[in-house]
Image 1 (tube, rainbow, N blue to C red):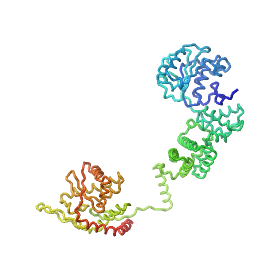
Image 2: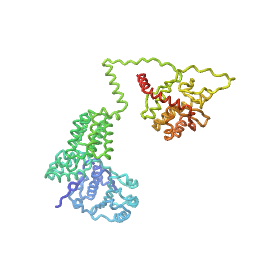
Image 3: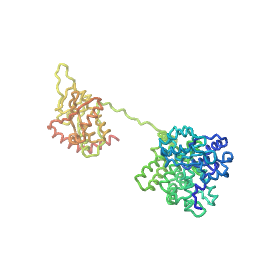
Image 4: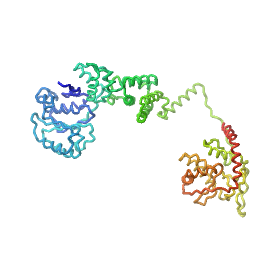
Length: 599
């Protein structure tokens, strides 16, 4: 006789052999015992969990001549024919290849025929979600009021694709994934019947890869048996054939990471890879382990959520002692990064080793530690310092002297040579100014308003309690305009910060910070460059300075404003050159002075 694959050799012949579906099998058996059999059933669930097997056993049981407690007897003529798939009363249809309306029309004609033997003609339609909408609609009437001798059993792995009008006409049963221990027990007992000895490591690898599907487990066992010594299902062959990381290796890596034992984690990872485990599989299994650990920590009774072996649960218990939720969130983030990086890096081993290093050093996963945990850690450190006799006292500082419109000394020096030169000139201009003198009394209302005296040299300035800028002779303004100009000057300074924050443009920031207003008529603000910004005007225009400055001023003032840039008379060029030379000479000295004052 030709060899028959394991999942066909050990396909269930009765309800008792269907494992892992205890919430469904008793109901089906009771319906057979009482005779309360529905005309349509829908079996849904993951692959390999027993949907089609349950449908075949049910079809055999409803036609059995002598059922025993809801089970087919297995001895009568119809049961024997059912075991060899020669029973004409059971029609299996693959919906993937018979999905059109023509096939359903043919089925509607056939259902009128009585069964040749037994009570019922049973139609088992596998992967029913593959039917077209037209085919579903054509089946509706027959499904709603079928002949008394017809039973429909639909099986699907994607029940959400079945239209609601079909679902409402069926008894629906959802099959669950089969627990790993149940799969291991089934494999061990069944293979013992054919004189095959199973190594525990091989069973662990197979059940882990099966992911709750018994049929997958049989197929994998078939593959491993072909590479194993005769009569043994070996762990070594399972690792070589399936390229699957052994559960024991994953547990060792994960437990070492949780304990902060980086050398131990590296040793376990190296051993797993060298034994033939696939690196992508190691990543998936590590992710699954920490997911299971997260559930184990937060769900009191998680056995129903995790289909894991007893050994796996013992490992979770050991790991849970050294871990918390914040650490787990960090671990999952690290593994997620590895999954993303693997698309661009072919050296998966390097990525895994880096991940183990990051996870093993839990204290450095600060980005995944909550603010509360960080505050608690700081509080503990403070308590420890106080316990050692440390006393914290607030530093005594003298109250700063009140000054009117102080000019800050710029001590943070830009990096580029051009902006550095601008800063030098600004510092020199500010330091070389003489001490402020009291403002002259304002003229009486009868006196004619005179323009403010011009600035001829760097040391001659116009000072006022509401003024923080100098105005050249060409742009002299009256005292009544000074408040407006002061507001515009403040808006320019704020605009410089706005441009720097939004566009990260140090050049524009430096130039605009040195701009000062000359006139404003309610719509157009005229400004002029000072200090080092004069030599940077070409860059100002190249960087769309006017456009961005107008945007910043509009944002600051809350109304549209136009900007025009004007330049002073060239008669001050000689003096400006002298100022630049002086600034360069004083630059180093001023920098040292600023640093000393900061200390």
